[in-house]
Image (cartoon, rainbow, N blue to C red; front, side, top):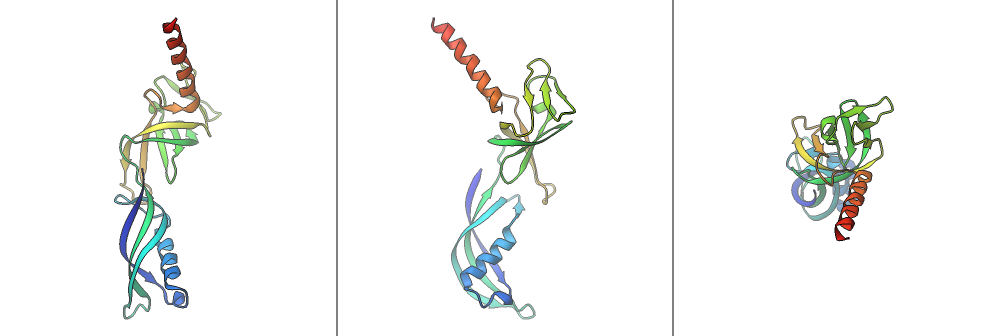
Length: 189
């Protein structure tokens, strides 16, 4: 889920930025610090969206930089358990698929791609034995988050499943909807 959060933090502005407008210098420092920032509390910081308040600057002896008590907002993506996400398949391996869901790639284990025996072909495609469903790179898919791990803070893991109705490649979902519509039309007659 995407959130806009308000944060209060001491922001370090190096001496080389003293000649700049204070708001621009603080924003530059915030962007440098928070670009690519990931934590369990904040999730994946996408951008600093604005500065609400900048307090008085304090220079700490021996450092030379100014520190400003600052209130600012960040746009962050924090994956949540059971959240339904949409994304594009970015890679397929013999153990599953990776799906780009925005600031992070989620992983779908081969056993979680569909309700079928799934095989991996040398062409980089996953195919269901009975359903003949095919999953390939660049397919747009809908999946559900089933696990989140921040064990390695530099590379958090998001596990996904597509094994339930109305999840999977959009082409599969459209096909299921057409079948459902035909069944409904038959019942009406």
